[in-house]
Image 1: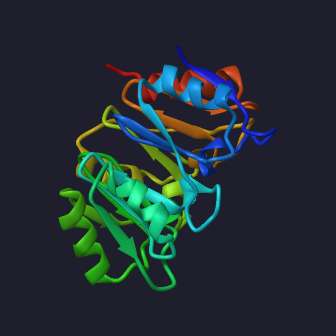
Image 2 (image 1 turned 90 degrees about the horizontal axis):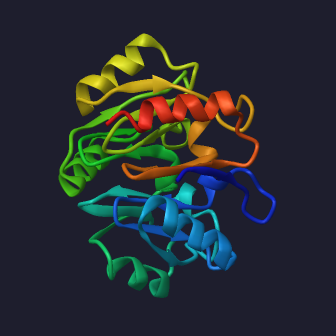
Image 3 (image 1 turned 90 degrees about the vertical axis):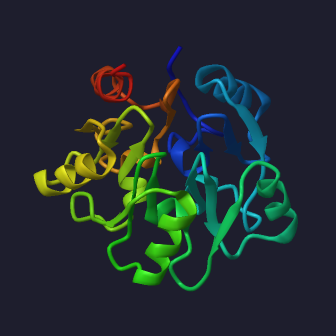
Length: 219
């Protein structure tokens, strides 16, 4: 079961939700119907949380099955919730919107190309995957220019052959181009996915859904 949906009328659902293989973090304001849809389609336990008192969970949180990476601006009570489910790495400094600047699954991660070497090494060790600095279609916020699952990665239609090749080499998974919400190239803003399913923004066309199906449901 895969579908399209909006959150409070906003089709940019990937900005608000971060999903993994077993859990998904959704804003505290999310209606029960939305939360149950995430549960049913992705086969996860949805956890309601805000980060830095904000609903943009997808922009502020990244990670994989080994750990969660989150903005260092997170409040203690919010951090306590995350720590119930994974070890947590805090990103401090100016580059801390983890969901925007990290694209990760259980085999690799791509990060903002201007991230410093020490931070890259720390993320690599923490998530237990190789990490590569990369752009996608010249966009530095790779976490929103693509979506990575343990089956495949879908990236901006503007991504270059070099960028796609780098991801394929690092992940050993298929990487394909796609868009969301009637031509939006920042795929991560409107797509929530794991290896079990996906939910796309409400304006996503049938053709776009077909590309998502082809890339992320290839098993």
